[in-house]
Amino acid sequence: MTSGKVMKAMLGFYIAIFLLYLFGPLMVMSVTAFNTPTYPQAYPFEGFTLEWFGKLWEHRLLMEGLRNSLIIGVGVVVISVPIGLAASIIMNQIYHRARSLFYLVTVSPLLTPGVIIGISTVIFWKDALGLTDFTKATFYKGIVLSILGQSSFVAAYCLLIIMARLTRFDRAQEEAALDLGASYPQVFWHVLLPFLKPALLSASVIAFLSSFENFNTTTFAILADKTLVTVLAGEARQGTTPVLSALAVIIITLSLLGALTYELLKRREEAAAERVKENARIAERGEAV
Image 1 (cartoon, one colour):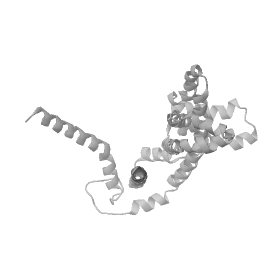
Image 2 (cartoon, one colour):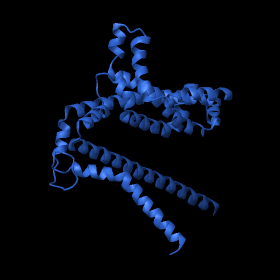
Image 3 (cartoon, helix red, strand yellow):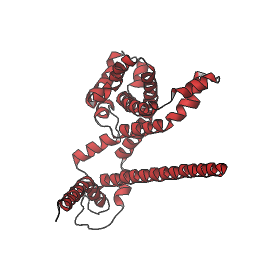
Image 4 (tube, one colour):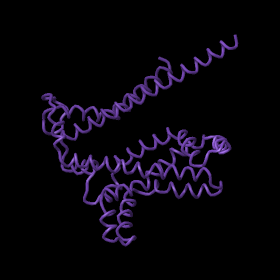
């Protein structure tokens, strides 16, 4: 046996242990969602059932938390993506020496613990603004406070994603559009935004997922309302049930379907682009002949 074979065997063993550690709990939880006992049990498998998926739909707190999580996630996307876009444009255009300070200010919420952000959000909207009855009825609600609190740091994620794309933008395109008579709003809508479309879509997805799974900030900002993660935390403290396993199976399935759909669409787009390039090369060779 050579040293190369030993290295490959050790590497394969390490990868197997890593995958088992990563996906083992998910596989066990998936089995418990279809097992008949009322307590999550993977072995022995006493019987196949879909009862827990029906009880999941009937679970009032989970459905209410899911609805609130979707509302908060959409609200965070609506606020965070435009703020991240505006901040990235400003950072790309301000004087070079001011960029480091501006970057520090905009990214600092990522370094702040979520507990501090949640408590600060509640205190700010309750005390610092001196809320009137109208503002209290409008803003001092769990869903609104959660959107505002999460957006304060999710916008920084959007900034980083959009900025990574914006740094590759050729400013000569803007100058050419302005020379041809376009106004600044037209340049923004017809030149810059189409170029940033992939980054904006990515930022929207990241913002929604970051909001959907957030716990620390949401726990303090949600007040008397509930989100899916806060309900799950309460259910887990009281003792987990196969209903939670059924929810995990649904989330895993949706994640896999989303990833597979994205990969298929991406490969289809790459194949179409490759066909266009091949047709262009054939046309060039034909003209040369």
